[in-house]
Image (cartoon, rainbow, N blue to C red; front, side, top):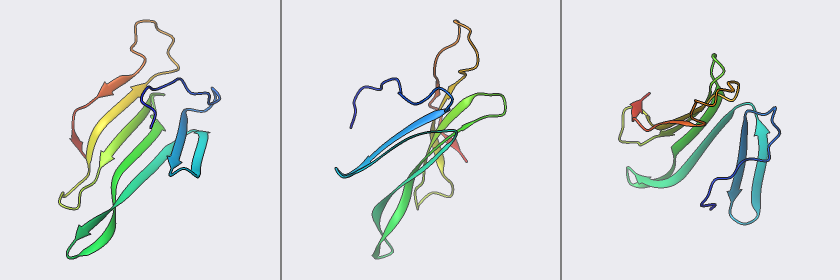
Length: 110
């Protein structure tokens, strides 16, 4: 796992860059306009093992041009998913007064 984020090599016309590594032999990298990633894990529920989708990462361009990346957490004991972070950028605005990445850590139910 990389400990320090880096600027992406993805082409500038792509809104997002995804780099995935699953075990040593499985890797995937792509530049894209939107992202939907679900990570599941094995859980024990009702006396049997099952795969549960526990985290979702969703990235897209909002109507106003803002790029938004949301991380959602899903738990079988909860009535609805919980958004744990929303990270936003506005690459179309050249103002030097704007923060490069806006980060909202407020927990929001879906």
